[in-house]
Image (tube, rainbow, N blue to C red; front, side, top):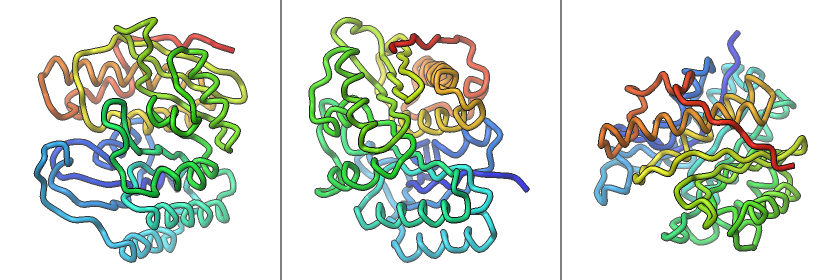
Length: 284
């Protein structure tokens, strides 16, 4: 039987954020994906108007229970979570991770601690940042905070690669083995974006050109690419190179198409065979 990934995230009908962004890249990488949708919206909220509703916690728990009854937990390689609307949902996710690990002790928990961003500050409900810091991040194997989120988790400012390494080391001491800081913009290289990945085996940075575009869903896609490539290779550096290169290809294709939404389907070959490959530079 096929192994898969249980992805607990929001979903939209139009565009690509949450599960609507994360599931397809994992499928293109060859994984079965069992999406549990926590929100059912017409489109992401960045448009200022949307239709739909959040899914009741009891219904989410019921769906997860049904997936478990199909025997999927025994075949689950990882649990993936992104945006969490409430701490109550977060606790349900951690209960699911614990249940999966009872059946599959080597299953990973990949947590994207979505809390805020540079220039915007926090955009989640009060209490959620503390939930991530005190509960979700310590329970995770892989976390992918952006620069703002990493700085808050580590309680320090990040203005250099050395700062980023110190911050990722602090977060790793909380529990996760792999910490990837995404969307890192530093004064020394303002025209580039960096991803810093810190692990017990070493730390690496990957730099790509910074394109003049702001898009929703990029963090969701990156997490799925990093997780999928790490599960396939077992090599953090190779996973970073594959995920970072694929993300640049996708964002560049979206920018060239002048699209507000990620052109995830049109540029799907970039997810598995990016035309431009960026190397990971070892930091330690």
